[in-house]
Structures are given as C-alpha cells and as structure tokens.
Amino acid sequence: MKPKYELLAPVGNFAMLRAAVDAGADAIFFGLKNFNMRAGAKNFEVKDLDEINKICKPKGVKKYLTLNIIIYPEEVKKVDALLKKIKNKVDAIICWDFSVINLCKKHKIPFHISTQASISNPESALFFKKLGAKKIVLARELNLKQIKEISKTFKGKPEIECFCHGAMCVSISGRCFMSQHLHGLSANRGECAQPCRRAYKITEEGHPENELVLDNNRVMSAKDMCTLPFIEQMKKAGITSFKIEGRNRNPEYVYTTVKEYRKALDKNLSKEEITQSLEELKKVYNRGFSNGFYLGLPTSDDISKAETGEQTETKIFIGKIFKYWPKISVAEIQISNNGLKLGDEIYITSDKTGIVRTKIESIQMEHKSLEKANKGDKIGIKVPKCNEGDEVYLIKIK
Figure 1 (cartoon, one colour):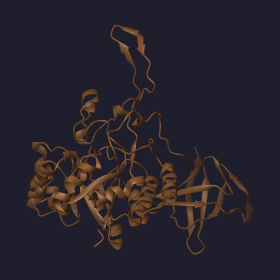
Figure 2 (spheres, helix red, strand yellow; figure 1 turned 90 degrees about the vertical axis):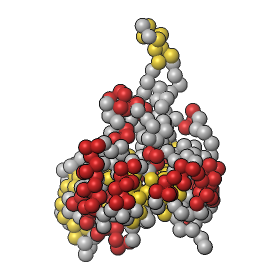
Figure 3 (cartoon, helix red, strand yellow; figure 1 turned 60 degrees about the horizontal axis):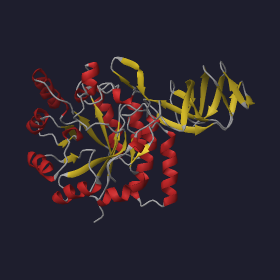
Figure 4 (cartoon, one colour; figure 1 turned 180 degrees about the vertical axis):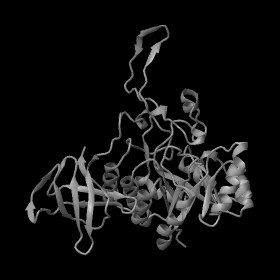
C-alpha cells in the first residue's frame, strides 16, 4: 500500500491558517501565548481554538499545538490546567519536556516529540516510543542514511516527521544558548533574538585597528533548508510527515510553500516541474536555499550572505478594501500609498481572507475605465474573493 504523506504547515495567525488550508496542508502546527518556541509570533489564545477548528474541520486538517519549551516548577500547574481545557480541541501536542509528556498521558492527549529533543538515533527514538509518542520529529542535523536507519526500526509506528523547508539553526536545535548569553533571551523558551543572523567582524583585543577581513560577515547565518529537489529520497528514507518551518513568516510564504510541496508529495515531479516549483519558492521570503544536513554536512556555501531575505519578489502596501460586492466580484479600494496600473499583480490578505494573489485586469473610477490609479484615488477592481478591511499589496520584482 502506498504510504500517505502528511504535509504540516506553520501557522502564527488566522491569515496564515487560511493560507495553509487553502493551499492543501494536511495539518497545521501553532502555538498559544506563553508556552511555545515562537514567543515573538502573534500566536493564538485558548478562545481561538473553536474558530481554528471551524476553519480546519471541513477539509479534515489536523491541529497540532506546540508546547515545546522548557517548563519550570511554577508553570507545571498552568500547563496542567491548559491541557485539561484544550484536550478535546487539538489532535496532538508537540512537546519534549517530560512534564508536558507526563501531563499529556494524564489527560490522554496524543503527543509528538519535538525536534528540540534532538532525537538522532534508534535508541533515543525507541525510548520515546515506549513513553507513548505517536510521532517523532527527528533532529535537523541528520542525513538521509541515518534517518532511514531510525525509520526502519519502527516501520511506521511511531511516525517519522522531518523538516522539509525553512530556517536552519547554525547550532544544534534545542542546544543553542547564544541568545541567552548575549541578550538574556532564551532560545529554549521561545525568545531567540537570532544573533546568529547579524554581521560580525573579528578584531584583535586591545588593537581594534587590526581587523580580520572576512568574505562574508554573516558567518553564522545559515541558508534556508529546501528539500523539494530530492523529496523522493526523503520519502524512501521512511519519512511520512513533512514539516515546513515558518510560524514567524507571512501568509504568502505559507501558501506558496504548502502549494509547491503539496505537488511534490502527491506525485513524482519531473526536472522541469521541480525547476518551476523552485522559482515559485524563491518568490517568497528565504535566505537562499541549502540541502540542510540531508545529503551531507553543510559547508561555507550554505551560509547566507544577504543582509535581508533573498526572495525575488517584495510587496508594497497600497491600501484597504472599503467595500466588496460578491455577486459581481468587485472591490472598492482607497489607495493610500503608491499606485496601481493595469497588469500589476497584487496580494489581498486578512485573517478572514487568508491570502489571494490576482492580476489587475481593469480599473474603474467614477464609471470610467483607467489604465492606472494614483495615491488618493478610490477605485473599483475585479477580484476573486475578499472582505471589507482586507489589506492590498502591490507585488514587485525585487
């Protein structure tokens, strides 16, 4: 029987959630305020869980809640109360702290072991299997041969999950203390300030004029992982759940990555199709692409030299939608910045809409057709779907 491959999407707000569901994700992972590895993201609140379920249920999208930080004594009762409250509102908890594992078992909630546990061998995986883990997220620092060695030990139970796309930590996930040391913000508490992404220079102590010239001052900023070109090898290694990193990114990133990896998981892409998908992935935020550790140890070529992202497209805020007439698919926009012209492509986004990409085919103002509109104009355009209050962005080639 052909295995079913799960595509797991990152979600940090409702716009990202709708983007993930619309693009074809099988499952989403998200955090609640205070207890997850992306404390800097907007995150959700307990009261949002019913709405999350309402969006996911029609398409059968599973919901995994991340509780993947270190838990201190004074927090155990809070976690216990939280799990009791949400036990019937999520499909599983992603965790690695043993207190959370124990509390999941107490409340009979399925749990997945986070990559923060750095599971890197069959014995470690077996330990968590005996604890009752339904899924194990392996360490990012493994190659495909090592993953296959682990996966063949279990034959699908528990399932093996690996990251397929997104940011890489220059250290070992779950073992970095640089942010804590420099800024008092612990990466293992979801507060990482990402000092590894900054530019550095080396000078002699006491003689700052003696500076070592580096080819790239961002010597610790790893490129993003991109496995789409060798996704078939990932499947053969025994991975059944493919996880996209990026809860701090934007809805267009989520939509595009899910859409392209959905294609790759559902069929064996041709070389031409892979090239096309890579071009799509390059449009949204990235730091350049690398193979991670899957095909061998990273080299200096896997360090990003870019001060900002290397995406090929950027977006410029244009304005908001004031009215929308669904029967004729027309939206009224007040242009508060820049301008628009025929042929431009735009994003329309909000928590209600998710993300919509469309091309400007016509512009109307006061019943007259225009070729372009300027700042201050109130215009009508044809759009597929949207809601009042949605934000409109012009897509520009970088």
